[in-house]
Image (cartoon, rainbow, N blue to C red; front, side, top):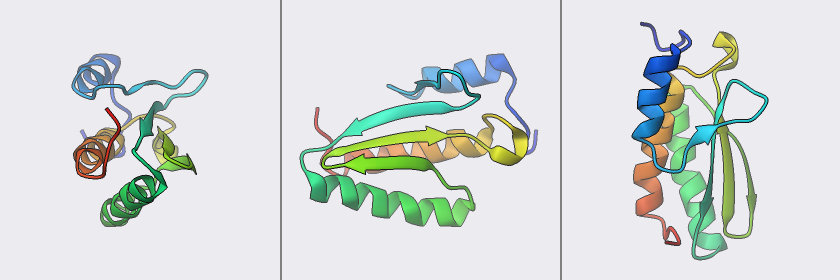
Length: 104
C-alpha cells in the first residue's frame, strides 16, 4: 500500500486504536484530536516541532491554536481520506506532545 492510498476501514480502526484521543472527524474522511498544553508557549513549541516533521513528510496538518489548545485535523487531500501519512504524522504528534508540556 502506498502512503497516499486511502486506508481500508480495518487498517484505519487498528491504527486509531493505537492513537489515544484520536477519533474520526464527523462529516469528513479525516481524523482529529485536540491537545491541551500547560500554556501558550508549550502549545506553540509543539506546533513548531510538528511543522518540522510535517515538512519532512511533505504532509501538513489542518490545525488551529487558541492559547494552550491545539486542534488538529489530518487527511490526505490527494487520496480524499486518511492514509498512512496521516497516521505517521499523528504518531509523531503524540511523541512530540509528551515532550512539550502536555496538560494531563
